[in-house]
Length: 111
Image (cartoon, rainbow, N blue to C red):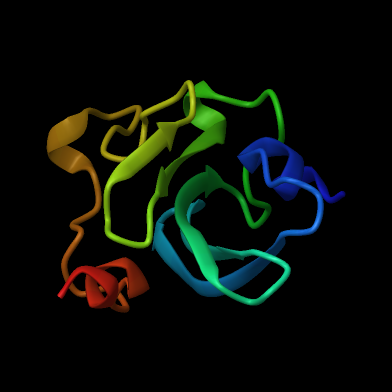
């Protein structure tokens, strides 16, 4: 099991696939992963953010990064201990805009 699968709590037999990665400014990255069961059915979508090129690892939180797990319907199932996506050290008003980035697959699921 990879560190990202461990951090997200992906069960054995399920797969995790990166579907989108976008730089949010500075060294902040945002990623989207899909979790699929052993039959290939979509189980969950993860949106994660981290400082640096690597996704957040198990046990990391705060400025290191975090994630939100969504059901295929778009419901929030789980949040990591850190909810720092919209915060920066300089303050919330200087956080990168959420517009102008590649579209999230999660929005296609709920429409």
